[in-house]
Image: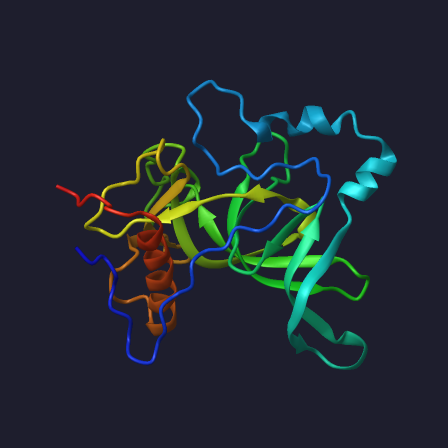
Length: 242
């Protein structure tokens, strides 16, 4: 059966998701998210312990991020001109636009954020700042009336069109997110580890809807369409929902 979705006229098929290369010695890991059994220690849980033994010189080197690839666009004027890049490298790992990443939380007892990289820019002082599409964990997404949405486990996320901004050095590692159309089952965690998304969340209206429901708007609908198609291309013989 051909699982490819029909693209709107004038649109080309999305390219396969490319995982970045490992570059040189590094302390971080590329881990594809919450594929661990309950109670099992995860690499990200060890980061505070690992960092406690890092010297000041190592810490400075670990936080050094630099742009990579070509400049995709330029914004601003004069002394406020800003260059936007295709990618960046930090701690020996390269990241590019459209990579999905875990971002370290601001507080120790919080869970990492998840975002898709949409913009990479170099600030006037030489720092690399990243803007991404924000994912919500259901238990932290507010309902229209009161309370929060119920989560079906650590793997579930809501997609949003809200932007999140963070320093390049805040990126912990890449992660995988599966965008599940309504007629497909949730990918098996052992075969296809990673988070999954079935719903999009509107933080202003505090509502959720299916990722392929109409009403997102043309550009947003196309964005979700491409993300779903990338997942379909990754999973051969994806079982239908009964």
